[in-house]
Each structure stands twice: as structure tokens, then as C-alpha cells.
Amino acid sequence: MRIVLLGAPGSGKGTQSQRLVKLLGIPQISTGDLLRAAVAAGTELGRQAKEAMDGGRLVEDSLVLNMICERLGEPDARRGFILDGFPRNLAQAQALEELLGSLGQPLDAVVRMEVDYDELVQRISGRRTCEDCGRVFNLVTSPPSGADAVCPKTGRPHRLMHRPDDNEDTVTERLRVYDEKTRPLIEFYRSRGLLRAIDAQGDVDEVTQRLTRALADLTTRPSHAGLTVRTARPSPARARRRAAAKKKKHKAAPRRAVKAKRAASRRPARKTAAARKPKRAARRAPAKRARRRRS
Ligand code: ADP
Image (cartoon, rainbow, N blue to C red; front, side, top):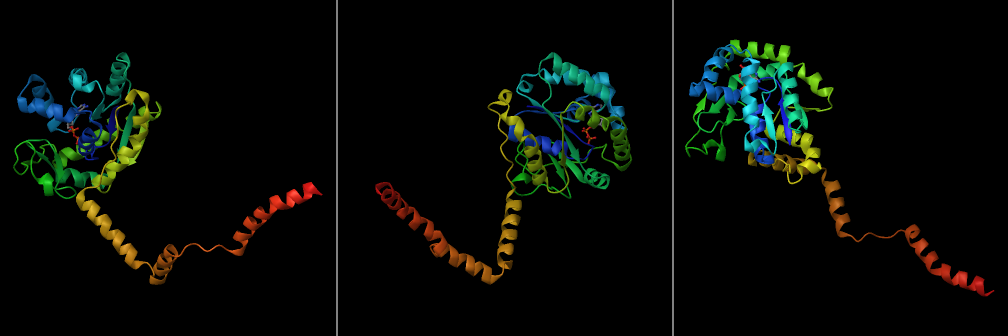
């Protein structure tokens, strides 16, 4: 399955991609992560990308396109991929279309993740990433907790870092750049019949469920045989909340209605006269017909 997650900074593309990786077994390809890794490693690409990234602007297309071409050529991308943060403008979308077309592997879907502006700002300011495993958390909406509090790489609590471009000034610029350069991709993909949209606000598990539902039909295509979207299970905390809500609802039901329901389930259903009649008539009918035939 080859998909693009499209959405503003803070819309949850990274968080949901990480979950889709587990559910679909295909890699997440995040241009932001690849560029940050290049900056951290001090490569030539990193050196050239850093200034634009620090200012919240887009890195030059030629750099990003070379990088993505290389990444898509790696063996793990053969079964499919989740593109996160790419394409980000029309030139990149057209280049991607050409590249995948030449490989005979076009995109299957583009999912637009919709979140209100105010919530985006709030999410970005609370965002933290583990320095070791790269997992994304949010101090307000999804802090590390329970089994997730331990980093799978180090076996110790996550070392959370605040991305340098997640500061207030840069965030405003990134959201402006999204509106100007990336938003037009919604129409680009809609006109190609690839666009799907989900409400990406609210509980993280619920958003994952909306996302897997939005993609569920793709797993039945013959070209994706063997790939299954395992329905996202609610987290233990969420499952507990649901069970408590169910219990409350049950208690709130009027007693008499509950009693009547229980009694009805114990009693064998009584037949009404009307229900019995047709049977008797049906029993008599052959005899009547036989008498008629005889006379
Ligand atoms: P977010 O989606 O939260 O803005 P990302 O991690 O996707 O964060 O990207 C961080 C920065 O990396 C962007 O602000 C931009 O400077 C650069 N970047 C990422 N992807 C691209 C891309 N496809 N084209 C150009 N620049 C990119």
C-alpha cells in the first residue's frame, strides 16, 4: 500500500504514521525526520537544509527530491510506504507522480488529516520527541505513560526533547507555508480521485481508528493481498473508560424496563392465537384437498 498523509504541522502525521507502521508492516518515510538526521549527522545535505528548517521554510525541492528518490529505492519500500511530510508543494507532488508512474507503482490514497488552527498551535507547543527511539509524544494529549513510558531502545524512561523549530515564531511561519504551498495539494489529489479525509482531532486512538477505516478498502485489492489492516485496538486506559461508561449507562436504565427485558428472556415465547391458526389450517389443508379430489 502506497499512501501519503497530508496535513498541517501538528496534525498528527508523525504519530499516526508510527501507528500505521505497526498495523500495516510498511515503513514510514518522513522527510522531516530524514532532514533532521542529516542535520544531526552534519552531512552536506544537512548543512544545506538547516537554515530553511530553522526558519520554518521549505528546504529546496532538488535536495528533498534526491533524498526521497534514494529512500524510495531502498528494499523495505518495495511493499509500500507511508509518506509523511512529502510532498509539500505542487512541484514535489508532480515529481512524485512521475517517479512512481515510471516504477509502475502509483499512489493508492492520500489521507488528509483535518485539525483546527488553534489546536495545531497547542499541539505543536506540547510536542516532544524521544531522542533515542524517535517516538512522538505530547505533554498535554499523549504523555509517556504505563508501558509506553519506557524507551524500547534504552530500556529507560524516554529522553524527551523539544524540537528547535517548534517555537512560537517558527510555528506561525510553518502554518503560513502550509496554507500557501501545501494546501493546494488537496485539490491536486482530489482531482485524481485519491483524496480521503478524516477528522484528526480528539483521542489519538480514535484518530487511528478513523484512519484505518479510511484505508480498509485498500487491503482487499489484489495487489495488496497479504497486507491486512489490523483494526486499531483502544489503549488499556481507553478500554477502561469505555467499560466504565457502559456500566453507567446500564445503571441509568429504568429498573422496570430492565426487569421486563430479563423476564422476557427467561420466558419461552408464547404463541398468539393468530400465530397458531395458520398451522392448524395448514395441517387440515391436505385432508380437505384429498376429500375434494375424492368427490
Ligand atoms: P512539521 O510537519 O511538523 O512541520 P516536519 O518534521 O515534517 O514537521 O518538517 C520539519 C521541517 O523540515 C519543515 O519545516 C521543512 O523545513 C523541512 N521539510 C520537511 N519535509 C519537507 C519537504 N517535503 N520539502 C521541503 N522541506 C521539508
